[in-house]
Length: 266
Image 1 (cartoon, rainbow, N blue to C red):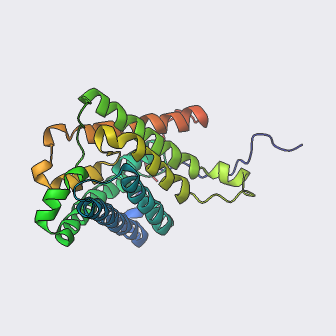
Image 2: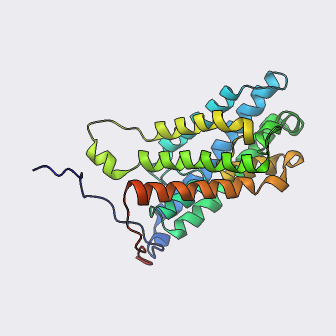
Image 3: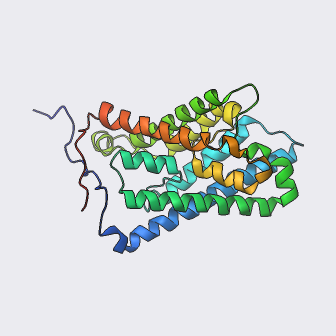
């Protein structure tokens, strides 16, 4: 009789700390990949946003911005998924740690690399566009509570947007689904990039769309005149809460995972 529950061949949860990975060159190669991917993500997306705003004399459509961000995520996840997993987002990394996909060592290293990469990528975008033009046309690149909305609404939008993103990541990369539905070709970067696209459509009018603390940090550092630092906490707290909810929902509700503690060391 066929097993109706699907295959049992599922990777073991990652331990909290893997003592061996810091001695493995692949660990550092993955960190470099996350740094470079986040750098390229900020460079392309911010250059596209500022350039389009400049060309259109001060305005750019939501659809154009959404395509720039979603399309670049699709490209980058496709390029580095086999090296680092293609996180490119501290909230995604944090959520994958909670979902027992990565160690805390790797999670911290990725998040630092992503933030540094975002700052460097935004700086390059500013250099390519020119400081004056970036200052003039780059206001939309900096996340903040948009007119007609309040802090509570902005926080909720960031939570919901990040929930959708991490839920998509976990579903698209689920090893049980890939094994069970192996006859259906699933290109994981495509739904992830498309998720970023549709989240931008929904969230740009509320916050400019953060859902990625590194992206928000890089844009704010590159254009400090519009840094909106008093609101910046929203773009860390919201994504972290959203990622936590998505990790718990997917791992412990949909997948009926055990609440047992994972191995501390390996």
